Image (cartoon, rainbow, N blue to C red; front, side, top):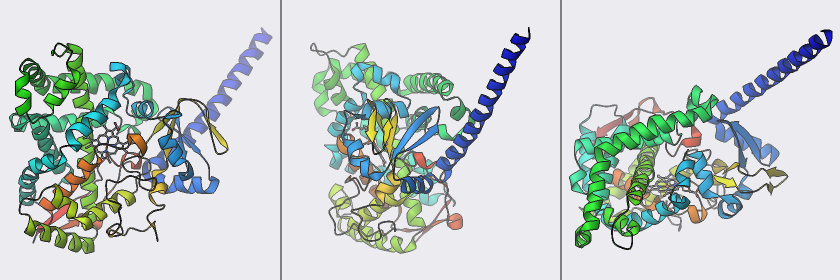
Length: 474
Ligand code: HEM
């Protein structure tokens, strides 16, 4: 009996000691997480500078590795050791999607974006400019302060519905469904995960609940029932009437050609795959443009000197072209430089991710297999080739250089780097310019309280800053 009591005593003591230390570890992790949410860039930068090595951070049930800038090019380009697909899929809660269709999700997305958006960017710009003009007018009629995020997302949804599916889909209900979808995707891929107690502490359960609640009910059933069914029948119609493809300017003929079987029909599985690509990929990305419109406009609102420079440039270009096109936007070099500098300096901590495919030695550390690795975007963005005072915001620093806002580099990571760098970046920059062209030349911008807040710097590309914008007509 006494032996039993002794064993029980040892076991209880051992358990208490483990609990004590694990709760201390948990508190330490929570403190780290708090840093990551609110001031991660500077904190991590300090840690990496002090140790000049890889830093491991526990969050959302994983250990992620942040790497110093000397390893950035290697990690971003060596796809065999630092895998893009699996890394992004894990980060975005899309591992299941990678199990479908031979794991081609990101490759398919890349090719579709290049074929549909990039090749016909000039047409897209001309098509969506009037949409933004209309929304700019509505914005000016609103009582200040305005919620720019809601406004940018609405304009973006309408523009995307028009470009992707054509005029038949441009109505209030469909555009609202597209806006809701973008929001749902953001939630689905975990943009808000760092912020909620439940998702931080029970990441696996959170993933499961989110798949069912958002993935199945809101995206598959909600969007599927409202727009998905019509798209389904439009796709069937095009595959049965191939002669109509030539006159159809939407994304559907491209998808039909891509996924039809040799007899011309589109199998049900391919139609489902098209829905997956359209919903998760395309609509998820449009939210990023809306978010970054807000980021650029807020920077402008805080910098009246740059407002004067950009207003002059845009006004003079609009005098030459009353209907601005892609070439007009390309001539806006000061605006382009300002946008690049905002993207460089807005303070994203982490933007791109890769996953190790084996245990990889990096400096003095070995990063274990199947772990997420993040280049330290904040530090990379403040390094060469920004030149003198690369840690200072200088909106016109890129004007007479070859570095346009959509050009990626190891010192400019908002769109990633290497073969997987964002294929939608030229579209994103063009849309941000369209927004400035249509909204800003006749207005003065100010932020209430001269400030805005950022909820989570790890997701700044998809999580709009919060602030109250005042727009005064000139
Ligand atoms: C300002 C807006 C945007 C930002 C900041 C952004 C940022 C990024 C980043 C950081 C990556 C990862 C790259 C890497 O790891 O090397 C990425 C990938 C990707 N982006 Fe974007 N993106 C934006 C807009 C868009 C748009 C509008 C589209 C589509 C129309 C798009 C489509 C994609 C796709 C398909 C990928 C996966 C990589 C690939 O397939 O090549 N993005 N984006």
